Length: 96
Image (tube, rainbow, N blue to C red):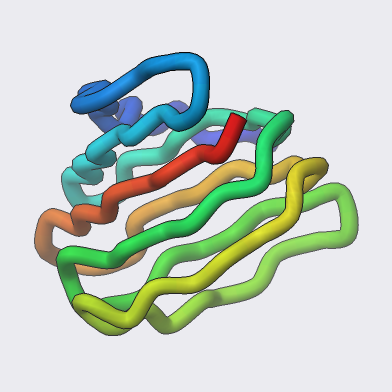
């Protein structure tokens, strides 16, 4: 059964023909909603904590550390949920 969660807040900071840079702010329990990444991307966590990742294969927790970036290939399909008791923030950089 799907829970009704508040949506994470996305603010596009830069967008042009080469990249899109978005700041994501998650209040406790907030989610991105299901989405598929059509571009390769880098995530730069601004907060240290854990996120819950829902995918077609199930769920898993990801531990993120502020300033420790990671890269993913296009095609990832998931929902990202803040399971911390505090706000969680990351910057997502999509390469077009």
